[in-house]
Each structure stands twice: as structure tokens, then as C-alpha cells.
Image (cartoon, rainbow, N blue to C red; front, side, top):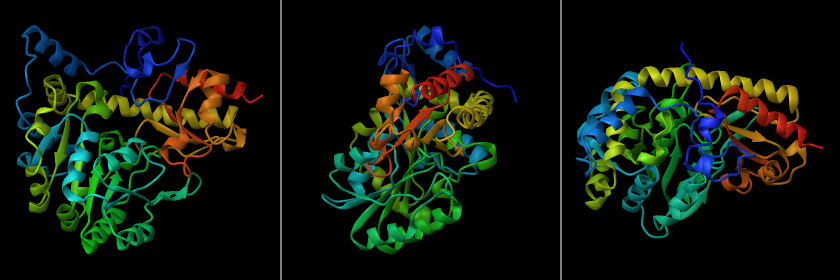
Length: 384
């Protein structure tokens, strides 16, 4: 498989996105979920063509994106998506909030599963709901899984929605289809809705392809709403386009309840780039997955050689590594020490859950082997 190489560091430092603008030039920035690879050529050409024709107005609704996504999802994941059952919006987080607003009432409980993408905590409260934490079972050594008994207990205690991350950020877990079916059955029994963030789905490795929640059973299609995008897999976060996908009349009613403005939040460039990504970006994505496969394994080797006390489980998906740095003695938030003493920026572990994230940090390995190697060397040198 032809790899996609990362851009050189000097070029990357001319970028003005968050990953490269938030830190001084002596810092290796590895916290923000942006990739260092060049934009896929079909996407770049589609955007250049839009500029040449001054095509900078409003996006023309959800249909173009939905019709591009349906064959992509079918080919990659065996997911039968009806374009009529897709509503687009600006990003996955907005989509999650809008769905939650229509499936829970003020103060209702929404289950989240730390360690988890930090905005999940805020999205629940933004929707007017109450946060209910059910940490993932297991850990780095034995692997993780959904805590189904804990989720059942939370639902019995009054929670009315489950915010699922599939695949799970930051641990890179691809959930077992059997666990997803069991989760759907629990949601049905208690009258709850499963809101599934599937933005990292296309970044699952070929040996561990993720299962879209809406494909696992008729029950999942009844109780579930999926929110996804091309933004993570194709590095398009700044272009603002996401899809809210349903597969039942119950789900459709949620989408029909959205304010008119929800769909209009998607940007024209986001729509254009997303269509190009889903229609023509497959070969580029395959090359990126091969590069990420190399990087996730290289990271394991580097840690074994230079930081053997650091615990890391090679992720099934994403380009994010969840590192247990407790053995280094850098406190509950070791990313603070890493930034100050190694000039390596990592995502702060406690933000992913105060208990589950203590002593941990998240590292973005969607970079060149040279940058990854330099980062681990710096961290190793900062032990003393």
C-alpha cells in the first residue's frame, strides 16, 4: 500500500490551524486531533475549482453530501444509508447537542463513558441534561469494553440517553458488535436513545473495521441516531460539515424536530470538500491508514526502547494514543510536565475524565516518524 507521507515540519509550521498556532516553535504539538498529511488531491481540486467559479454562497442542503456518503458507507462498512434520512449540520458536536435536545428533557440523565473526548461533558450540559458517568470497563493492559451492567444501572436510575463514541476516543477501541447489540437492547428496555458519534469510523484499521451502530440490529435502528463526518478521516475540521443519520420513524421524528437553521449551519466549502472526500478520497484514505498503522506500531517500539514504564495499547482506530504516564511520577496531569520540561504538547488526561484520566495523556501520532521519534526522545530526556 502506498503510504501518504506527512508534510515537512517547516511547512507545517506555516499552517495557522489550532495545532500549529497555539504553541511556540520550540514545542512539538501533538495534542489537537489534526493530521500532518497533505490534503487529498481530489478535495484540494474541488475547493480550488469552487474558488475559481466564486462558488462561495450557501450550501444547497443535505442531499449532495448524503448521496455521496451512502455509497461510501456501503462500500467501506456495509452500512445501508438512506439519503432521505440524513440531515447535515456544521459539525458532530452541534449534531449531538441538537439530537439530545430532542430526546431528553431538562435534567434528564445522559450517560458518558470516560475516558472520553472532553467536549462530551459540555455537550450534555449544553443540551440541558444531567451528566451520568459510567467509565469504560478494563484498561490498557487487558483492553476496554462497555460496562453494560453499569449502563443498565444508570438507565434504571433514570438516564434517558447514552452518548456513545464509536470508535472510542481517546482509547481507539472498536466496539464489538455484540456489545453494541446489547447496548441497543438496554436502551429499548428503558426507553432511552443512543446517540452515536462515529466520526472516527473511517479511521479504523482494516484488521479491526468498526461496526456502525445503526447496522447491528433492528433495535439499534429504532433507538439510535448516528452523527458522523468526513472531517477526522480527511482532515477537514475547519470546513464544517457533518451528517446526522437515522434509520427509523422514531429517529426521523428527531431530525424533523430540528430548527430550520440547523441544516443551514453546514458551510459551502464543507459540503464541497465532503462530497469530494466520499466520492474520490478512498485511495488517499487507504494510504493514510497504512501510514497510521506504521506510526501506531512505531510508537510502541519507541516507548519500549526509551520509556518502558509508560503503558500504551495499540489502538484499533483513530490516530490517537492513550498513554499511562503514571510511572514517570509527573502527577495527575503529566501533560503539564511534558510541555514545561520536554517542550512536547500532549492532551491533558484529566480532561477526559478526572478519575479515568489521572496520570494519563493523549498523543496524536498522525505525524512523520521523525517528529514522533523526537517527541519520545524529548519525553525520555525529561525524566531526570
